[in-house]
Length: 147
Image (cartoon, rainbow, N blue to C red; front, side):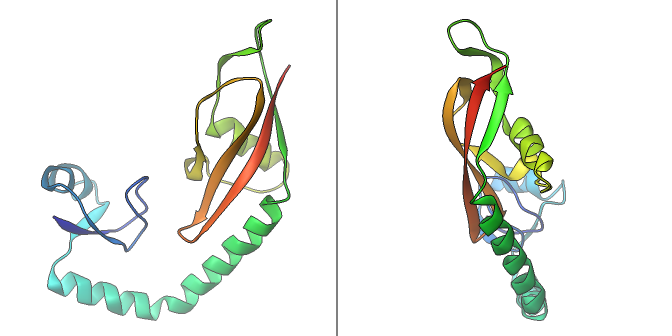
């Protein structure tokens, strides 16, 4: 089933993307929750016209994302966590702690756009990807230290 996304869906696509999904996923989740519409011929024409009209706005959004990515590329975060004597973290470090550490630096980043490559359960150096725009992804290194 081809659908047009009305908002960003993690690991599927970004707003206004035309994607192919399984029928049940589209009919039972994406369309009823307002995350997508069926990609009919008329819906695709409306999408093309809307994209043409919003081209200059999207260029500004992308430029803002690139400027923020340039600033964030210089950042190295240090996150404190309670650990055992062996260096294992009680719980794990997730996107919420990373978003809070970035917010302390004066940049407001939504935790939903932060992706960790692997679970952070020990003290050490890691990286996180921040998806600022569908074409702008910045990788931020961070260090987890014992409190």
